[in-house]
Structures are given as structure tokens and as C-alpha cells.
Length: 423
Length: 173
Picture 1 (cartoon, rainbow over the protein chains, first blue to last red):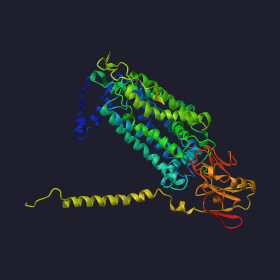
Picture 2 (cartoon, rainbow over the protein chains, first blue to last red):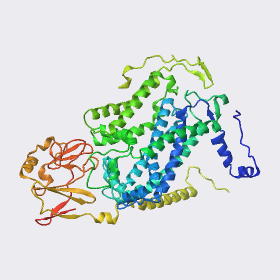
Picture 3 (cartoon, rainbow over the protein chains, first blue to last red):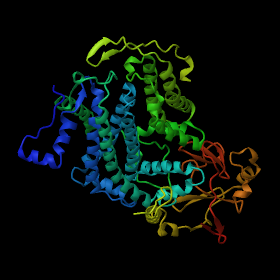
């Protein structure tokens, strides 16, 4: 592979265009010849899958907006109209609704991959932060989209979540009224959520462009976490990774199709097929599955304000990740102790997801508290301590050279892991 | 040019820069306010600020739910025993200490906004450990005076402004 490959316009038109707007050059450098580490595994295909997920949501969303009516008296009926009357409306809606779940599934895998291979570390801090911004925007967008259906879960989910704002001391109530456009969730709320739900995906698209830009400045991390040294370590993005990403996407689509065609409502809640009734609260209010871990954290705390702070804190802490884990070795492959804490963290997050769907009492409440404590301890205690005390295992010299790197003195830090690091 | 310019002194140009910036910022702030304030409740929402309800048909121990500002208001005609229980409670130990007398105008009638002070769900009547209401969302228990007794809600159920217009009509708001 020639990595000092330079884009050369092939015909008269592209030569003319290249001097005026180097669009083809930009596409070539960023999408075709972009040098990519040759050892990326399938966990690295989720960036591509996520981009297509966003495009899927935007296309189906624009179509749905052509048939949807954002008014409290008509919203629920217009959804049923889409399902029953609009040609292929059921398909488009099921793609959009399940697409949101698939989007979150992919983003969770993408983030846990980053956490395992240390992709947030120097020099990719900005890349990581932009990713957390995208995640936050995704949560807000998905929440507002769920409200548009105007079923019981939509309404009461919206009530509970907007009420979180009222916990802010002094100005909380005023902000809540400002947010809702009234004294409770009602037509003004539905209308503005529709407006914002249409807007935010394009904001996400903009941040995705910044995210990819930042990626192309630093280049990809890779499973060894060792920086790319020369062109022997890389291959061009096209055709090697375009093909690999597409293959992964097709497999992903197979699973996606199972939900769309065989089990389109399994990820939703049946109560959302009952029209919103501001006078009756359903017995169990649960958010969509992808928000359950955060919901579990909210409910784990007996104090209202603290619960809200911890829930927002659980996302806010992610912004500081590059400075909490300062271990130079990026990949968990060479971090035997981090690996144990990492998988415990993974299990703890899955458990929080399960607990978020259970009633907040007895053993469920107790486990929610344990998992919440571990969630924060992982970032605020384990990571800084391991950065100091963990001894990385032997590493290869480079991506293309499996020989053990003897220039790294892995025993230079004297001291064992403090046993109480996980409390 | 023989003028001597002292570099530490502000020049006419500095004055122009600052004036321009101040005008620009004031203009932007002035324009921002309508864009923010349009989010607040509009005139049609604010206009619905009071409702009247007929309470003559409520039996002792019965209750009525009316919508006020898009929220339910519980109007409960309490039994003699319930009033006794509510009044004899030692309020000092409650999470939000309020005497029953501070919460009612006529002790037979309890009027509260039926919205859980935790996160806005509607509590269910005659459930929970304290003979009042129970919020199914996150497990807050209220007593027969609408006071929080157990669970994550921080305060008692809100008492809305109301008055008895006559024997059978109550006006809320």
C-alpha cells in the first residue's frame, strides 16, 4: 500500500472542480485512502453502524412527520392512522421506533469498546467528549420522540422527567413552567417537543461531523492501544474497512429486521397503546429500556435532589474520563487488574438496567444502591488508583511487531494494588 | 503627524468599539427575551386558572377529582374518625411538619392538588400505609391530611387556593 498516496483528479471536470471546491479530494482523503490501523476488530464497525442508524432515523422521521399531528387531541390518533391507513406506515413507524433501540444498542457497544481499549485517552480526549455530547443529545431526542406518541407512558414519562427540573432550588418551578409552557404536560409541551425532536437529529448530525473530523485528526485507536508508528501499521479505509463495516452492518440489519418484522413491540411498553390520560397514572412507570440504568440510579437515592444529581452525574462523569484514567497503557489487554474492574462495571451496568425496570423496594433497591455506588466508584476511585498502582503486563513493540517490548520498564512503579480500591 | 499618542490612554476608536459592542449586546438580549418568554404559559393557558365544583353529592368518606390547570385536585369529605386521626397526629416527627388545621379551611373537607410532590405522578386514594394516598411511581405514602409520611417525596401534597362559594359549590384557584 502506498500511504503517501495523493489524490489526483482523473478527468477534466474533476481537475476544474479540484481548483474551486476540493470536494473529491476531501472525500478521497477521508473516506477512501484514509490510513486505518490494520488490526481493528469488529467492535470498530459500530461507528459506521451508528452513522447509518442516524441516517435511518432521520429519513423515517421526516416521512413520519408528514403524517403525524402534534396536537393532544389528534397525536395518538394520528399514530394509529400511520399504523393502519398510511401505505407502509406500520413499517416506517416500526423501523423508527425499533431503530431508536438499535441506535442505543450500537452506541452502548461503541462506548464500552472505547472504555475497554482506552480510546478516550490522550490524544483522543476531544473525540471522546464529542461522543458524550452526541450521547446526551441522543437521550434528549429519544425522550422527546417517545412523548410524541402521546400514550400513557409518553405522558407520564414526560411528567416524571420534566419534574426532575423542579428539584433545582429556588428557580426550579419557574424553569419547569417555562419548559412545559403550562402548569402540567399539555399541548404546548407536545408542540415544542415535536419541534425539537425534528431539530435535534440535525444537531446530532453536526456533532457527528465534528466527531469524525476529530477522529481523522488523531486517527483510530486499535485493539493493542499502541499508537500507529508507520505505514506498515495501516491499510486504506477503502476497500478494507468499507467492506468490513458493510458486512457488520448487514449482520446488524438481520437482528434489526427480527424486531421490525417479528417482534416490533417487545421493546416498547403496552401501556403506550392507551391514549394519554392526565388524570390516571399507570401502576408502573418505566422508561424505554435504554434509559433504565439511569432511572435505577435516580431511584436508588432516597433524597429527591440527590437522586437527580446522581442521575445527571452518571453522564457528567463521562466528560472527565480522560483525566480520571491517566494510565498511559490504553488497551485493557495489557491491564490485568483494570480488566477485572471493567467487566464488573459492565455487569453492574446491565444489572442497573434490569433493576430500573423493577419496583424500587427490598432486594431490588439494595442492589440498585450497590450498583450505583460501584458505578461512581469505578470512575472516581478505581480509575485514578489503577492509573497510579496497576502494573501493565508485557506489551508488543508495535501493531506489526509482536515481539515483547523490553524498553518499557513495567516494574518501575513500586507498590501493589491497594485492596480497598473497589470500595 | 505630530500628535503624540499615549498608548495607555483609550482612543476614540476604543470608545467606538465599546459603544458598538454594548449596543449589539443590548439588542441581542432584548431580542432574546421574546424568544424565551414565548415558552412560558400563554394567555389561553393562564386564563384557565380557576374552576368550580359541585360538592353537594359527595357522601361522607367519598371524594371528587376535578381538573385544575391540567392537574387533578382531590376534594375529600372526611369521616369523623379520619378527622380525629389527622388532628391527633404528632406532627413534630413528620418529614414536613404541618398541623391538620393549617391544611384545611373546614375540617370535614380536605382539598389538595393530586400530584405527588416527588415527580408528579397521581397518588391512588385509600392505599398506602397511612390511610390516605399512595403514589405508585416511586412509593410515597400520604396520610389522610395529604401529608408525606414515607417515601421519596419531599413535601406534603400542595393545598391549592380555594374557597367555599356556598353550601354546595367550591371554587378552586
